[in-house]
Image (cartoon, rainbow over all chains, first blue to last red):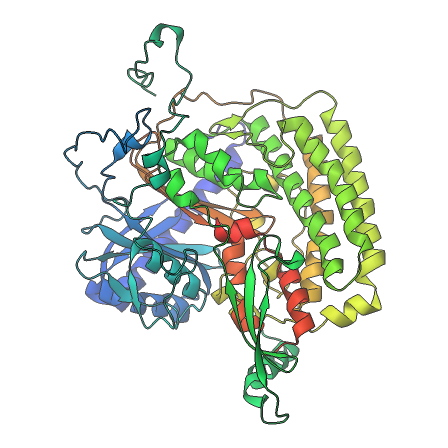
Length: 234
Length: 389
């Protein structure tokens, strides 16, 4: 990120120093993590002071225990998951036509791409913990095989993970071993399906066309309904 | 960050409570259903409490009456459209909801708002904090049976809402923050009027201090009630005034600022060692006063210049992942944004403050007496939209 003013060079220099020491600290933390987890630590990534680690599913609980007991990451920020499968509906959701009556042609699914710190599977756990005294934070990920969506629970280490794991269970269908009681948190008990999975259609959009389709108002010359987003590269 | 002796004692007392019941006094247990509609819940939270006499043995919040699925909806909306949704998360301090999401998008796009936009953003951010917490200060008195302060709160919150409306056009849902800056510049005369509003808010804080803080009944009902030890609070993910009231000196505005200009002004993070309901009230009262000082200083130094950086008309955010959090009125709020270089985000995880703040209630309500349920819930201060999202 570029600084706008060039006058405060001293401050910019101090920032650079701080960033450098932050990077050194992050490297040291990653080295300790890899000592503690061994092969459990798959990949890591640092960017602008943020640290990502991806661990094996079996090391998920060990990671929490290590961060909490050895490293002082006492603050539990959140736990959730990511479904990396590209949405099979794509932007058909933003359609003027009634999808329920006039279903669009099925398309070749786009290739699955995963993000920071990589990934091999469709579902990935995502969690973040902080150390509030030193201001460090770490974002943890773990791959979950699609045919066996389960992971060890973090509740014994971070009691705050209780509700977050219930949410991930109901929204993605991930089981947490050792959780005191996985039950619905937001949705009614008889609800079927896992809404945050990419293949779960947004039903409101399927039954009623979305009136607010256009991203920007159409220009006068494109009032034939042409896609205003074409050719207007950012 | 040490657990004081007093906190330890009250923790042990709470733990002992469930073991003790039914032994000393043979009473029949009952289940009490509180809510979903109750003034202490700021929305529709239901609490199923198992009681033994007057004492709570187990309490379980039931949520989802207001679940709107913003994480799913955000996936089919463009980045500028998402702010309209997330305005409705914490509806008392709406502008503050927009800020972390916009900052996350800006970080992915490697855009920085011009200084003037950053300063005005921070002013509006603090104004939403004042508008939000003002209501808490009045409401907390209602939880112990005093009606008058809440009318004062509604009266004086109006001054702040008027200023937010004058600048943004929306009293509750400004939808004013844009990727790369703000929608508009400030209207003429706004700065002077806001200064006047801040004076009124400070007078209101004094009023609340006289009416509520020193009140004997209020003190008796809140001191030593609902004590949260700091390590327990942290492991449950408590943030904001709730954790600062347990003596944890942590404020995202000071410790990891990003995109807002709190580091340009002189202010103080308030903490309280006790961790009880009174401490949470006291910290919020001090924070409101501190926020008026932050606004006053910011108004002195708003730089001139453009209000928007150069961003494309159609916003496509480059592929990447970013997590940005800010110190919102209710606690730390963050957005984990995953982009695949599209018009809409691929995944948005909303880390809302109240969800984590309320997750401590099953632990905290164990062993307390029925009337204290209401003061404890009131002092944790949550907004249902912030829990259910």
